[in-house]
Image 1 (tube, helix red, strand yellow):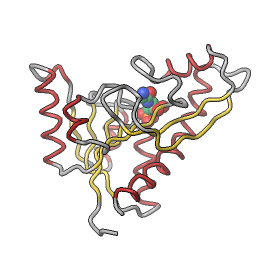
Image 2 (cartoon, rainbow, N blue to C red):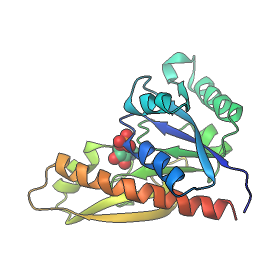
Image 3 (cartoon, helix red, strand yellow):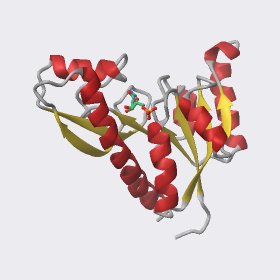
Image 4 (cartoon, helix red, strand yellow):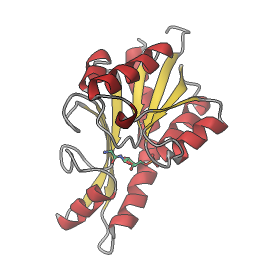
Length: 200
Ligand code: GAR
């Protein structure tokens, strides 16, 4: 195995609890990778504050800062190249990654989704909306999925899943809480396996 550490960028929009789980797991498991960049569309979300507290470079980038979506994609690519990023980890990033970035990082972008894909994925299916849809469909189990990112929402190759029972008295919020706890185990495990395959 190479001694060169894979440089990870984590994209977030929210509290960043998956980011934190990955950050701690990389250290604990002594994985051959380090998070060197946190990119977010929200300057002061929990994830960005965590990055700042831990000496990780932060980039606040939104489409509104640029004249066009192409310029936005180019700015994103520039940040990634400046930091020599090898793998992008989406952890609660609530924006679509531009196609130009997906193409430049083919099979190098992973995402976590709070349901058992291919069910309950696609545009508009994120956060609490996912859990509401799972309950409305009368599912008896849900869970989380780590998958590769391609040009279509939640359609990339599934890498790993973890199941969670849906309880009779679940609300979207209680289900979200249990799924999130399972994500914190799943994402580090899936990333470890993914890195091992990349670094063979
Ligand atoms: C997680 O539940 C993640 O699966 C979900 O957002 C939450 C982020 O929480 N992502 C999506 O819905 C993407 N489609 P976090 O900021 O605490 O990691």
